[in-house]
Image (cartoon, rainbow, N blue to C red; front, side, top):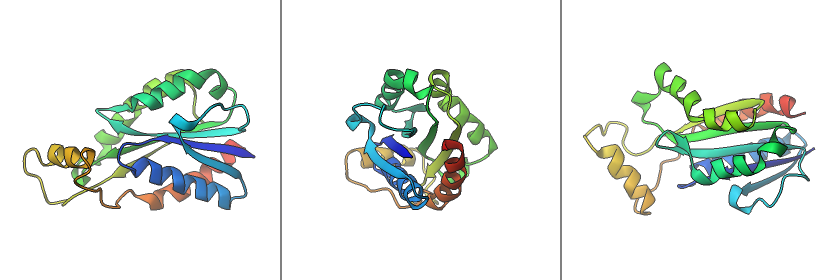
Length: 170
């Protein structure tokens, strides 16, 4: 089975998740292409698609939504799954926050119906830093290339999701 794993990322966290998804699917015997959404020319040669995006201001990135809009007809006729990656301080990872995630991806689900959906949180900086404006300053530093996100992407959670997803894509 030929599977496309595609993503839109600003800081590299979503690209790292996409790479892990691709490695797991390859390990399960699939022919996998991992590439940014901006490099995808078409979907016809793929049997299934896994798409992921960073979440900013409660929305998928504009290029990710454009990808879904442009290909929604094809995505409705192929096994299709989505994942989202967002900066999330540990104290915000509660039940209410998880419920909000479903609102973030509602525009995606309105255009194409994924067989599976996952969310991966990226934590960064000093977890004890709760000073006002710390999160905004950190995000600005990442955007300007001054700071790097720590590797707390919960990548260990990718494997069980992809193993379950594999059956749904077949």
